[in-house]
Amino acid sequence: MESKLVAEKVALVTGAGRGIGAEIAKSLAAHGAHVVVNDIGGSETGIGKDQTPATQTLTEIRRAGGSAEVNFDSVADNASAKKMIQQALDCFGRIDIVVNNAGILRDTIFHKMEEEDWDAVINVHLKGSFNVSNAAARHFRKQESGCFVHLTSTSGLIGNVGQANYAAAKLGIVGLSKSIALDMSRFNVRSNCIAPFAWSRMIGSIPTNDETQKKRIETLKQMTPDKIAPVVVALCSDSATEITGQIFAVRNNEIFLISQNRPLRGIQESAGWTPDTVVRHAFPALQSDFYPLHRTRDVFSWDPV
Image (tube, rainbow, N blue to C red):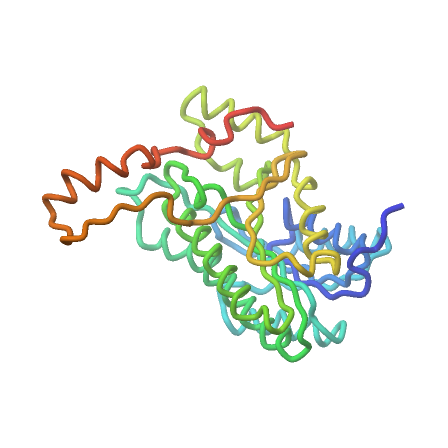
């Protein structure tokens, strides 16, 4: 029998009505945490409200003997984010863990993307992660402990077609996480990212216009959301107190540590650079280390194991 790695800790999991978020919430509860299950219950594009998904996750946690409460507010609203944290305090007396998982997709090729599609995705993913994290950070500071886990994506870390809004938000979350880790390390607060590979209703909305894309979707269907939860629980436990500012990817039974931006090569000109010498000398010298226009599937080119 597995140990209760997060026993008596209090966790807020956003977007926990379905998919990855639901599995994370259930796993945290199974390992002893009290969980606030948040989900507005919108469509994968962020339209509508439905209390059924979050309520279903709540029911499953309680049926299994776990402790949970439910919240239907939107992470995109700052006041609502503060209410989520306050609900954790009111119901369980403290807040120890925040998992920023809530998200939507509005995929379209960049030159056809509308401002509304950009704003909607940024507001849920990036602003939402800020809203909830900022509300929790004040309490983490006072108690001098706390853990953030933010869901990022290889769409931002590597790249995918037709996801400029989503990629920008998800890469922004990486910067947010690292800044939180730096700013709050003195208070024993840690912050990490996970890029999940898993089948979800959001992935199911990706257009399949060619055989390659169809094959990729079929592969993704084999990677179930429950594969992500163990890494989240482990990061939230006291066994991971030294791990912060990191980016992980989880793909079926594989766990990857993702690289972070660092200089690859440098070139110096004592006389100073001119546009002409940059073109004639700097670019050719650096070109062998230029990154190609890879997409996620180009980098993770082998079948998941």
